[in-house]
Length: 373
Image 1 (cartoon, helix red, strand yellow):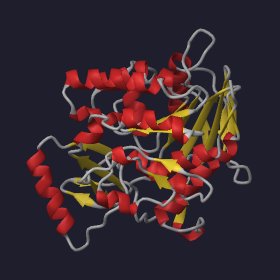
Image 2: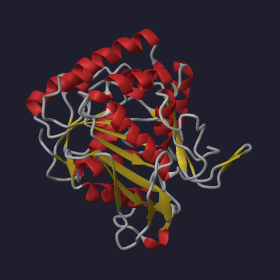
Image 3: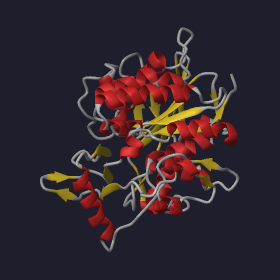
Image 4: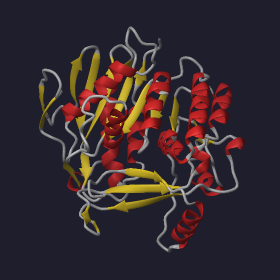
C-alpha cells in the first residue's frame, strides 16, 4: 500500500479465511463481482456480441449467475460452492497506520484450493476440440503458491503437458499475476513461456520475474514512482531474446503486453504480429474508461502521469522519445523486436482497480492479429 502496488497473496488458514469471507459477505455494503484473471478476461471478451467464450475453472452458483450469456461453462467446471477472493481497494491518499497510498490500487487474498491445484486445466484442454477456439487464454499459475513444493512441481509438469496438447495454430496468451516464490516464477519462465505466444504482466510481476531469473536490472529492489521506460524495455527485450522465439530457440513466445498505471508497452518479435498500434491504444483506452466506469474517456476525470520524454534503454545506446499528443503511440525497434508505447489517461478517482490488467490484456488481444506460421 505504501508503494501503491497491486498485490495478491494466498491465505493459508482455511478456517480464518472462511470466517473473514462470511463476515464480509454479510456486510450490507458487500459487492460481488466476477473474479479470477481468466474469468475477467473471458467476461471482457464476451461483451463483444459476435464472440463466444469457453470458461473452465471452479464455477460456483453465484459466479455462474454473474457470467455473460456469451460465456459457455462445461458441466465438469460447475461446482457446489463458490471460491471467494477478497479485494481490499484503497484510494490515493488513504492511510493505514504509518502508510499512505500514493495512488489507488488493491490487495487480494484468497484460500482458493481449486484454482491453486489447476483442477480444471485438463477439462479445458479436452473441451477445445469441440469448441474450436481462435485464441486460448491461460492464467492462475500464481495460485499454485498455496500448494506444497512437491505438489506444485507435479502439477506444473502436468500443466505443461496439457498446454502442449493445445492444437497447433491456436495462439495462447498467459496472464501473470502477483507472486512471491522465485522458484515457481523461474519454473514458469523456463517451462511455460516457450509454449505460449503471448504474455501479459504488470510492473510488480516484471520486476519479480527479472529478479527470479537474474535478468537485467535484477538488483533493483522496487520501483520508485512510475517505472522507468528504459528499464522496462530492457527487461522485456531480454525476456524475448532469452526465452522467446529466436533462430536458435524453439520457443513460441513472440509478444509481451506490459501494463502499469501511467503507460503500456506492447513488444513483439518482428514478423509474427500485426495491428499492435491499435492493440496497445485499445488497452490504454479501456484502462481509463473502466476505472472511471464511463463509456468513453471523460477528460475532466483523467490525468496524464506518464513521462513526456524518456530514453528507450538503460543498457545500450538509446534513442529519446518525446510524447506527441497527436500521435500518442510511439514506436521503436531493437534487434528484430518492435516496441509500441502509449501513455494512459489515468482515472483521478477510480471506482474499482481490480480487473483492470485483465481488461487491458483482453482488449489488446481483441485488436491483435497473429500471422500463421
